[in-house]
Length: 395
Image 1 (cartoon, rainbow, N blue to C red):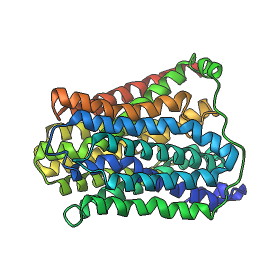
Image 2: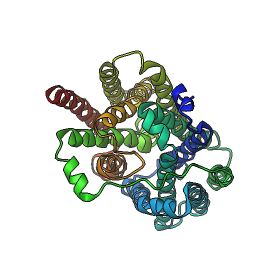
Image 3: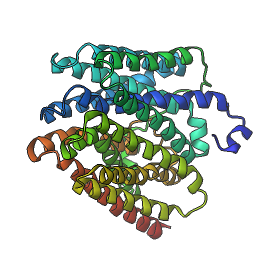
Image 4: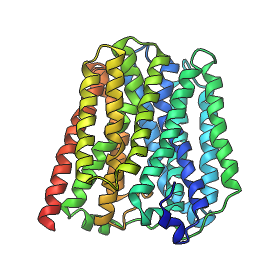
């Protein structure tokens, strides 16, 4: 799976594979909220702001974990942080298994806070463990990370859909909790090369970076792209239930189809990237995502919804790895495992979008769910054009 030059240069590909596999757990945790909402009956009531609060709790947990993860890695090592993150994730899922509605909303928010904290710790530790691989080939590493992440997201949606009518929600969540627990055992028995903790950029360095138009453009582009992907991932199942009147299990299958399209798109990108001009791939990706949003906004049948979801997934798949590769050439010292600077703004986009949709849906109705990523996709296309112009002018 790894480019051949990685093993030739002496990097421990076995340790890198184990670390990358952790993105499977990360995908499970990050996609869990969008998949569990129908199982908790939120398709039957319009409590959109409460759903937004769940996303906010998840987001706060992710952001709060960054400093803690870096500090623990410096003192205890990468394996300790990976094990701790997986155990926290398992505990958070077990907690949520016993606080389903009609239990207090605050109890569920606390559970999502723990899951977000665990996901943030896990991502930071994984990116630290694979940093030698990332430095050699950022686009391929991000793509492979996305493949593992997509598998976790796909499994979550497919599992909840397949067991929707067969088992109670608590049993499903307890089953999901087993996955990070098993990964904790794997990481407990593993060791990773120690390079010292990743160093965050100082405030003065960040200010100096953002005097560059390219840094601002890359930050805004990733902000909108993350927001687009997670707005769809968080709200697609509820949108399809209320828009088309389909059953919750079918809507979750459509969510799984979205993750499958993203996954296949990233696998396809591995073959396409070395063979085609990246500017053309980016342009095709933006057009595909825009068409997907338009189709989903106006369709009234399952075939149209499937077509829209497929175009969205394929369109979103290659944008992030391509942008990270290009950004790595311009700002080689930035690292996606550190939530500061460009990646902090990017992460904020992915976190704010599904939360803000709760307020918009409360006021304007569920149809607004497709309007936000459609507008975000237009913004991504415009920013890609500006980045291309800035590169031409600057070079």
